[in-house]
Image (cartoon, helix red, strand yellow):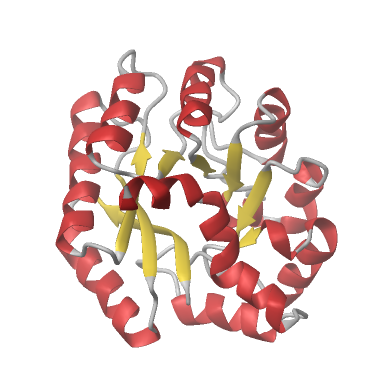
Length: 252
């Protein structure tokens, strides 16, 4: 079994992105892909509504193959209602935070509390750049602040924070934080380092499709210093554990 926890539809390229993701599913035998739809850095309420609707449509079109994460802009006064619609009406499995605010911004707190109530995970874009850091682009320290405040929350720090040697240290002792390997900017050594720091039980497979190389990410896991059982954890078991509530909801 193989679960890809991190992929996207991009505004203006919805149909093209759908075709690429489904083609990857068939070619690489991916059982399930979890997506969020993204657009501008500071999306309006109308844009958020459109993006989540496109995620839901893809879930319906490829039922059983595609799961969704509800994308939110915490700056909006009605973001709790957006989350409620995504989870209760659309059947999404978690919440996505991108770069509209830092993940530890107080405006995020009510959303995290609602996710705890729903028992759903939160994927946080965290990406350290040597140059060109975006405004409100979360880093490991922001994820750590959030996880420390809400130890009940199930948080996924995406992309290994883009610099695992810097960012993993921030969340090493926070057991409620997992990481995904989405993106193709890593080497197998980064996987080895991350496993030594936090264990295979807190690593999730993700591709960042479309645009990123699924095969590169898959190969990094295959080549890393991992036992067969550890590879199984990363490829799907850890995701199933985090999404247990969502799967129970889908099958109820």
